[in-house]
Length: 272
Ligand SMILES: Nc1ncnc2c1ncn2[C@@H]1O[C@H](COP(=O)(O)OP(=O)(O)OP(=O)(O)O)[C@@H](O)[C@H]1O
Image 1 (tube, rainbow, N blue to C red):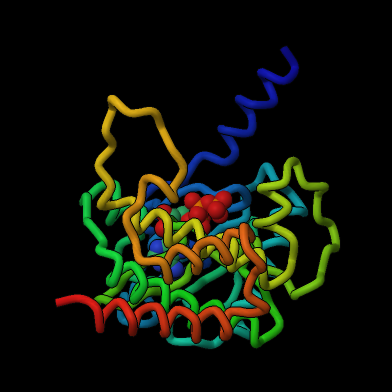
Image 2 (tube, rainbow, N blue to C red):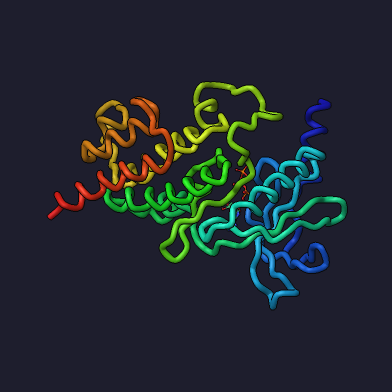
């Protein structure tokens, strides 16, 4: 019973704020974008910048000090990662004792929406081109000494045809294990260990999602693995196997990109 009251209380204090409400005396809420593990995210208009659209992420009240700390860490990391394909950090402010982080708004669609809502189909070539763009951003993040640790289709956005990587809420310095919970299973260990390979592993799954967008299940045959279900070139197969650590993994994102370029070149030469 106590747990029930706790849950009711948590959903009440974490309930999203209404549209039109002004935050920090400056940012007017246009729309609630979503609730993450530690924050509530809003699309806002900045009244001091001629109504420019920004994203304001507010630490969840229920997460108390942990929510604040994680948002602060996200801010510190975003400030260091200045890149045209990563949301720019705009600063922090307090709203009734809650920490808020302002970032650039990427007015686009997530790859998750493109695949599942718009039913967009990605050919092998387009999938590899998308992957190439993603790896460029990931290589930049790693080059600055950080790992994203949450490379997934809802965190990759497309704006004007360009890929953007968002949500640095789990990002860390490479090798920084402070405060990290023990991994629940091997999958989480591969995705969340703070090293470059984790982002490459996650990028392998990202590529699989793109490639599966053209797959039509035959409900009469038993479910099989991606190797049987997907029709892709041998180069792409090896690329995925190495990303998923089924074969010796790439040492880093730059080496992986070079391999991807070779695979892409061969594919383009062989297509009519
Ligand atoms: N900079 C941004 N530009 C545009 N949309 C964004 C931006 N940041 C977040 N969003 C959108 O806001 C929503 C909520 O994002 P948020 O990062 O708070 O949580 P989440 O990704 O759903 O969960 P979690 O943080 O636990 O992974 C998502 O739908 C995301 O696409």
